[in-house]
Length: 318
Image (cartoon, rainbow, N blue to C red):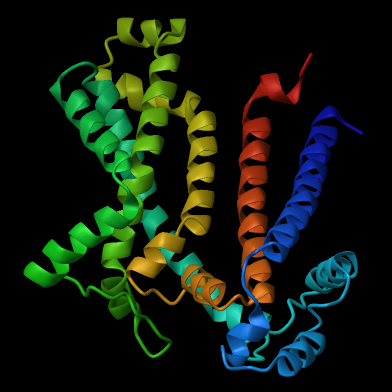
């Protein structure tokens, strides 16, 4: 087996092992959650006999280890169980919401990634001058403010005062693409501000690191202007760390949208998760947690593989 195939196989195996360990954490965490789903379904006036019968019917009295392996083997086969509070198939309920979450994350990435790279290149071009300082200050301020606060501020000024976009990001299958984009304008703006600073600063740092190389000095001696040196020589050689940090932020966009979905009442997985946490519906919480973990680990694994393939020092470790 070649070293690079062995290295990639190790990354995939480690990711699967990590996902297995996280499934244990998710299951154990949902078991110790306070509250009783039977009480939540029947209400405070339920008799002890009715509560006991419902707990037995729902299977919450079975041994935890037996429930864990039944849940894990079911999830591996695509069976995420049924919601305790509604009896709805969880996989069926999550399918449309999962695509809604991916739709929101996709358009946030479409805006955030090119903008972050452009601002990073601009900051390098005007290093230590006012454009560089202004870009750094604005992006750092945006990442320092809680995303729910940014969401409510934008909602007040842009949706309520100026009426440029709807305050509630409701989408459905009957809407065309333009209507959907108009509905998610504010959530996309908030997510862009949240991830912009990290990607911009990593782009700036990676290019500045490459700018110390001898071939950059040679390019400057040939008479190329500063933008040509950065765009033609520094940026292509700094693409590996930039792609890595972009993938990490894409993972955050998919997994970290819970707060934004709740703020804008967006029909995604985050909203579905929060609704069922309040109802103590453990199978739904477990399913959402496992999917979020799988997406996050999967995108991190892709980032690792891209870094390995693009960096000779990682492909041939000593």
